[in-house]
Image (tube, rainbow, N blue to C red):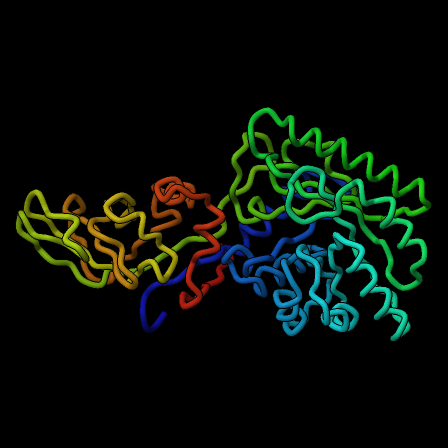
Length: 370
């Protein structure tokens, strides 16, 4: 690698292993959607999609049409679910590119039907029911009116019925069980009105692991696909991404030396301080200032001073022989030591999703098979 030595390393082999583990867990007859929203959680949507397609993924899921179109330009032909539906004026994109939106109100249904009638096209959609998330989704009380309107449609086609769990990863599971029950009630109403959508899906990563009764005919793993889980039950998955850099310089600093912006850290004794060309513009949270760790020569070393936009300082006093060019790992494994995205997330008061999604666009993604 030439130029600035900071990059995100993505193991396609581990990604495929995770996909296979999820597929084994849910068993035959359940489709596994490859969730690629937010640039595949920071991993790079196009490369991830190609790897999953080669593994047999038949569906992908993104947030919007804007996230789906690069997949089409990359030559991927699998149907793509749009989790946040579509905006007025995007009907042509849906029809031309095989994009399948979630619908959550009658106005969207009318727009789909109007476009399909004008252009003599059938437009599939998945109806999202709000079973307790309180975000996007059709209120179950509005379902009879929606189904009545759907009965008059000849071009908008109900292909799937879905919902989204609010707290499937939390202990207890009472809310999730209530959501499953409400979804079952909505499903019965849909079937009683003569509609039989092929795809029934509720389960996110935690849902597919902890609530097998939620599997339906499709599941939507996001964070589990990329190797993170907050539950003890299978499937067993491994982190796919590592955030890496190299030592830029090493300086001997005396006791009492202020380091970084604001002089928030002052050396208590003589120290060897390494500067690393990775900062918060690359996705290393500023909240890790004088709190986080990195791996150098297989040893954990502390971040000292404020994480800045482009640079971070490490105290490498305890690690003999550190010199410019040495590899540095902020997230990932080095030798027997490992820092997962859970650690910086905990220190920054957030979740590993945000750490992964926040990895800067200026960092190249290096795809490896190991």
